[in-house]
Image (cartoon, one colour):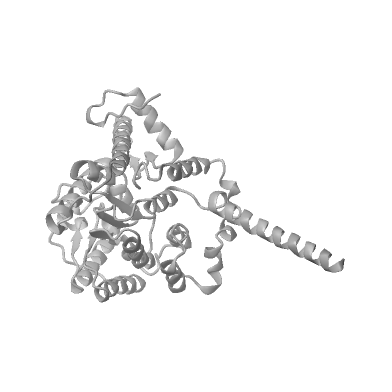
Length: 402
């Protein structure tokens, strides 16, 4: 009799433990977690079919604001994706490259080097690391990253992120706009925006800028010790593993006096990259010659708006084709339809952003600010509504069913 009682109690305890584990996993997978545009972008990358991307761009907000994959597809036939998170630190660049090769193996990988531009006293905080670590498969690459970059006593929070985000109930109802969009993402199986995010603003600097004087400027400053270590580690790994389809870039930024030392560190990073035999394209240095306008093409000091984004995407797409021989992958009819859907949404984003910029300029608002457009339910509903209400906008017309 006692033996049967003990067995019954043991079964109940095991069932209770399993229920707690399952509840915990469900909560940290769907509700009690960090969820924003970075989450959406990273999750959507892993929904792309293996071998379907011609190119992947690695970096931070410079990448997902400055490059439009749907625009590149529509105009050049190239399928691409911004594998990028906000304020991405140097420690994640090599794991990002490994992940991209493992899950896509594209013809070209472009690394925007913002992650290597931080001085030792500027290194992004843990929250920036987690934008990568919380949103990728828990594979060997992920475990190597934790062992390299996260103190041992902090690693359990990465295995069980609910420890970190258990109080994120407080972020509701604001977070629902991303939660609904994430559910839609999983249902569709692809990103509507293909990782793109922008702010509808045309920023006009009110202090002296130096972009028109940088083409012949070879001045350098030492990189931060940590940034240089990670840069060299990345380059050495590429060299040792015979990986040559990688090009490093510096996207355009508005260079003012307080950003001048960063520009010099960029030159130093470029010299290091070239010493390992890899190409470096510095559009911070030559952006003015390539037609990037500091009074029209940015939404703040460091990020391109929709006008600058199209210029940069044109530049990169032509570079891929002309300099690196990238050719479009063969897509199924289903994949083509999905990319066409993303093109339609890009049209809506551009059209809406252009209107919001025009309104801000008419009100004399040319400083920082503007309307953010990211792949969340509120932004999607807004641009869809705008498209329905403005059906005669030429190239950027997308009329949706009511």
